[in-house]
Length: 408
Image 1 (cartoon, rainbow, N blue to C red):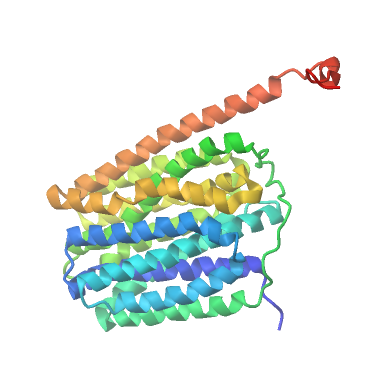
Image 2: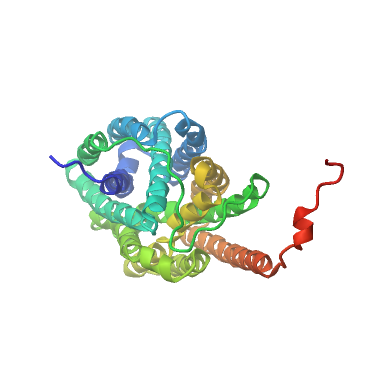
């Protein structure tokens, strides 16, 4: 039997990873009824999940220095499948919160590992390939959201656990069929690669990209995890439709991401991120102002199209800041992103309970608009830096040969 290619196997990891999370997102209304969890409790549970997720991604950089990335993915994916069983079997709110915390630990570790391996594969290929993997994840999340909503409503939540395990099992086996990752010399990516900055200058670009990541992931979490309970109120005669918002969000993400590598080759990453954030902000504004089920679903679809390319573009930019230390750079950016994404579910629950879901979605639109301003400033700063380097006159030959003061 011919061994599968590492790129296909990693794409399968992205698919299985997102499919399980989609199952959970679609089953949220059923899980809330099953465990007696209210809207404020959901916000707290998702905050605990986010805290574990961020912590795992932050610590994952050190872990990946000790454990080979594909070996780590194999082991944690098994734990990930077991965590889904505990999650979908939850019979109380505390059980659900504990399971979500554990799911955050496994999901955060897998997220960092698969993106670290993906950015390395992109460097080896010498062209953008990461967004296609994220496109597979978005498509899987869409399928999972619909399957989770329908399956939980008709057959119970434990059936969702079986679907999650069935998607993860083949991927774990496929990971045993490819060799471990070897250290590689970074290659440029279609002219997009930049010179690796010094350690002194590494911090600021990574920190700013972490802020953009945090804003975008906060928006994604809102669309993925909050849309189902919001739409369940608008589709009460048919609760199986509650997953439509998350499914259409992820479906539009997958469609745009399938074209994302072409966009990256044609435009620079900063421009792609800027336009994407504008679309996402408009999408949340549409949801906030929508008066019915159809308008809300279309708004979430626009959010999916807008957020599609932001995270993979940010991951690629972060990794290029330090090609030989990409796991550490991604871990640092994830830590910064966590400062924004962590309080998002709790704030959403508070705002929705105090005012309304529409006000909460309007706040996310404002956060994305602030992200647009930041990315535009970053792009101008990068342009000024590059133009300054290109116009700087070369030093005089005599200066090159002049010995340092006090040297022999």
